[in-house]
Length: 144
Length: 109
Image 1 (tube, chains in turn yellow, purple):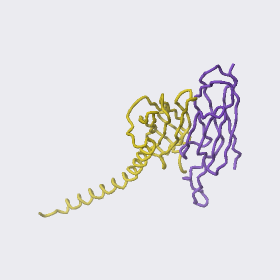
Image 2: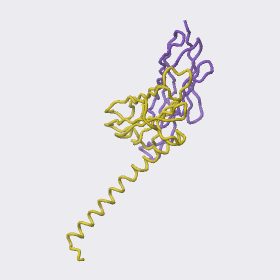
Image 3: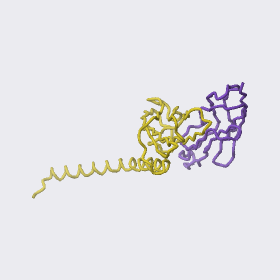
Image 4: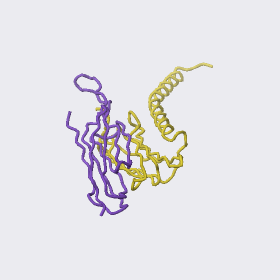
C-alpha cells in the first residue's frame, strides 16, 4: 500500500487532535475520581440511589465567590455537598441529630467554574441517596 | 488579621417543640490554600474554619465539616427543635486550633 502525501498529512492532524483531546480530558477524569472516592468514603461503600433529596441553587451565579446553596433530605443522618469542578471537590458535610428540626441546611460556597453540585445523603439505615444540579458561573471564585 | 467575630440569630422565645431557624455567620477570610500572593508568587497557606457545631444544653444539634470551597465569612443556616428552655452553644474551630464560641438563651413560654 502506498501512502500519498495527502493521507499522511491527514493522519498526522488526526493524531495530534486525538492527543489534544486526551490532554484536555485527563484532568476531568481525575476530578471525577476524586468525587467518586469522596462519595465512597462518605457512604462506606454503599452505592447511592435516587430519593427524596433536593439542592436549591441559582441557575446562574454571577459571582463564584459566594453562591447560596440550600440542601435538604428529610430523614437523613448527614448530607455531604461536593463541587465536582473545584480544585478540591469537598464543600461541606452536615450532620443532624434528634434535635434537628429538619434535615436541611443553607450556606454559601465558592465555585471555580460552571459545574455540577452533588449532594449525597446518608440515611440512618446505612443507605445513601444522591442528586445533582448544575450551576452556571460567570466569574470563578477560586484562586485569582 | 481581621478580628474574627461570630454573629448568630436565634429567637429569644419559642413554644415547646417549636422548630426554629438559626442563622450563623462568622467573619473569617477562609483562605483556601489555592491563592498565590501576587507580589511574591508564593502560595498563601490554607486557613479556614474546618468545623462548626451547635449544641443545646450539652446535646448535639447540628454539626458541619467545612472545606475550603465554603465562602469567606461562612454563613450557615439550619433548623432546630426546641424541647425546653436552655442555651444554644455555637463553636467554630479554626485550622490553627483556636475555637470561637458563642451562647444564646432561648426561653420556652
